[in-house]
Amino acid sequence: HVFGASASIASSASSVSIEKDWVPEIAKTYDDPGWLTQTNVTMRQIDLGCKVVAPVFAGFVIEYFKDNLEAACIAMGVFNVLTILCEWICSKQVYGMIPSLHTKQVSTPIGSDKSSGSTDS
Image 1 (cartoon, rainbow, N blue to C red):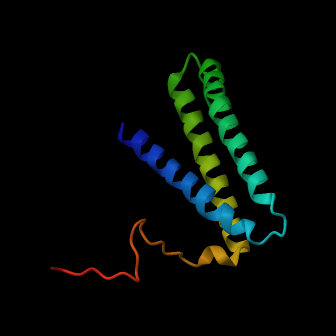
Image 2 (image 1 turned 90 degrees about the vertical axis):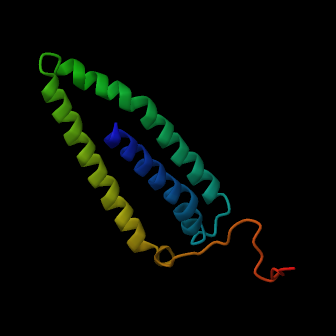
């Protein structure tokens, strides 16, 4: 349960950072105002497609190795490691190609205003 929860949190963090931080930053490098919208649509389609195909793929692997469940687990583990490596390599390439991703952007919390000071009575 711990590994599953950790994987879920890591996956969510990765998706949020790429969808909410990287894509708008990359969109600034394009002159096309529709690029951001089209990219968000494409990323959503890929994400939903993977959520549909992954269980089907896992079912096929388990069915193929139905006599040896341990082999099915190993096959799925190897596939997961390979996909994580592929995602990491692609993310690293994009990060290297877009210099504006190298700067850390600090956001202020909602409702905080630097110009207004607090007075204690």
